[in-house]
Length: 309
Image 1 (cartoon, helix red, strand yellow):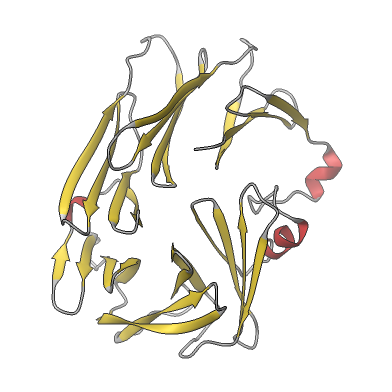
Image 2 (cartoon, helix red, strand yellow):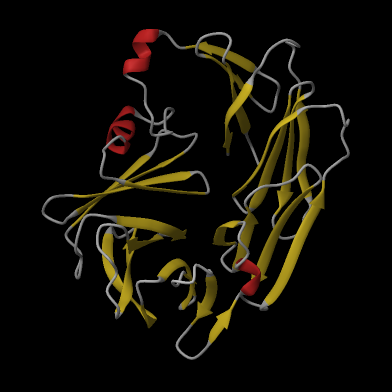
């Protein structure tokens, strides 16, 4: 982790934001009324202008992995426009692709990147017909798109989550509303029950071979997540106990996210500021721990976002 930046907002002072870096540098930004009319809502305000303009299109699917933001737009003739931007840089990659085979509709969603390949699935605008057995793979280096056959036929209840060495991680949501998660190849199907709990909100492949599932909310006392190593087929349930806090302290917000194979969590309190904790998703090792303390005791600052590089 090279950089961790936080953005706070003071609702008592109209549109006043504070950006804080790991080095303790604070930058105050105040938004005027005129700038509100031209505000960028695509969450890429630091990107080059051309990329911000591209990302503000209405019918565009967005995907982010390891601080690289992708935008995919389907044109009227069925061709695809893909742009990507790495946070913290000025570099934008632009790829124009002819209409891929067996495409229908305009909603296609990138869902995974591995090295130079970006995986795309169809979503939303049309019901997936029983018998669909492919997704799309964009080669970012060669700037081409091809069909990839899956080892089985999808049904309208299936949602592909990740691809790993010709194995498909997918979620099945039948009429009984009980989610089921499977790992499947040409010859075997493995049910991953640990990832079927109700509060498992983020399931993905990291480190080219480990499936991680994040619970929806961390509590005041712990962070919980699960991993499944695709290479060793070993399940591990992870738990990190948080330090005890003053019972009288008002805890306003807790959150945990998964980025760059790390678990980032923060606990926002009214009195002490925001505590930051960064954990290795597989070993539970603490990579960073610190606190941003407010120098304004009467303020009501709210944490808007976190940028990780």
